[in-house]
Image (cartoon, rainbow, N blue to C red; front, side, top):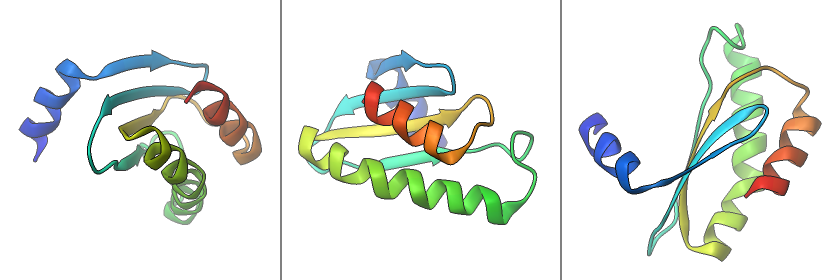
Amino acid sequence: MRSGFYAWRKVATLTHSQHFLIYSHPAPSPRVAFIISSKKIKLATQRNVLRRTVLDALLPLARASSRDLVLFLKSKAPTKVLISELLANC
């Protein structure tokens, strides 16, 4: 699985923002992944709430644009700020 991501990452488009690294690539059946390190947010419950919120906001966008998206959280911020930044960059 990991080796598949490394190959996919080489052909994907990388976008930087203040809080995220966003990889995207056209796909017939779009998927979204959101990676949050435990170093950034210590509690698993907080990571899961943020992950669900972001995925709920981005999955319709990914389906509409027919793109696979992989997001990496670079720095911690309030959820509303993260969602508004994502919608502006995707």
